[in-house]
Image 1 (tube, rainbow, N blue to C red):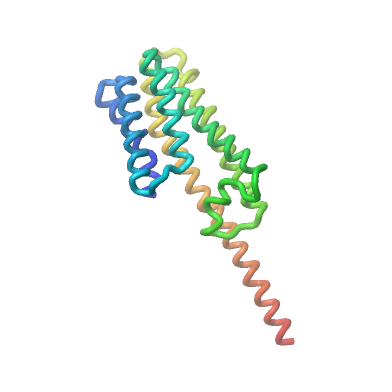
Image 2: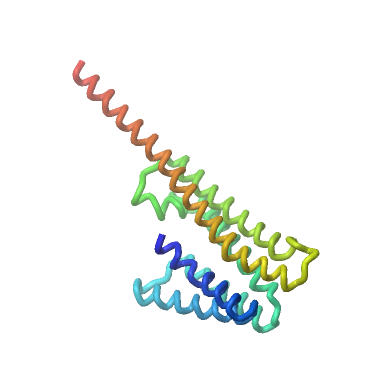
Length: 204
């Protein structure tokens, strides 16, 4: 949970800066860039390396953040959310066909044991989640509330980026825990049943 919150700190800082500067999207973008750089520096100092997801996030925020500030156009920072979700989704999808294990399995198989079919299904579920988040962001950023002013639509998008994306991610992680727990329990039950059958056979 702490890591989850820690990884979302740049988004929280973006949101807080936006609200404290009277909805200044460019000040918020600058704050998000600085926060991401500091976040990456702390990761490097603590672990002497950056995880791939942190590298991708750093590159994307620097690129789209720079374009936002250079052209004074919030379109770029709005697209950043979709692009990074789709990058993660495509990487997960690609890992399904490269190597013996997909990314989700590589990250979790030391902690839990699951059938191969469940690892595949879980990876595809994550792919679908990232793709959905990317599409939802585009809808909220560019289509929702078309009758409203640009400033009002921007404020709605910032709230969505903070509460909507954070809430969706948190809910999805809770879903994943229950999903994995169900299959772990089923696997344990099968293993226990098999063990009992073997023991009974030996007794006979």
